[in-house]
Length: 114
Length: 113
Image (cartoon, rainbow over all chains, first blue to last red; front, side, top):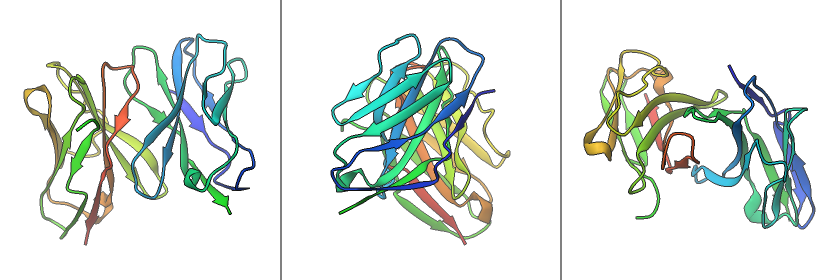
């Protein structure tokens, strides 16, 4: 069974600064996908970024980028130029290739301070 | 609509009553999922539908929970004889196929009094 661990229950960052959210996972599979989802107070779970395990290049989406370390089973999210709208719960999630069940971490509550 | 929709947005019910939660997936998505998000428990998988195949119900917590998907599109999650521990946010997601990115709806917040 896969597990996903987010060791930072809460974090805060000053507006315009950079913050990194940590995620580690445990799996015996070689091919899988990793995701970061954002859940603001509106409850809508929004996809932030996706990484395929077979790709060595780290995924980036505008101000969001990941540091994917496959050997270490680490998948951190970096948010650059933090904005007030980034305030939300952030969930790291794992899915094995060919599977369908997402395994989520417990989440990190990020607050962006003006 | 472009995204996954769910109704109702909020539901308050009395212990022992039945409730139905509805999910309308993204058009063309063959895979549909239900998750439950409880305070302090994170997100747990409930059930998965893929096309016309038999659903995977392995995540349903008890036989009071059931779900169906009519015509390969809209899905209904039914909770019979609700209990207070059923209070949670119920999230629906859909994807174009089983391992592709899952897109979530806004959820239904259920409160059982």
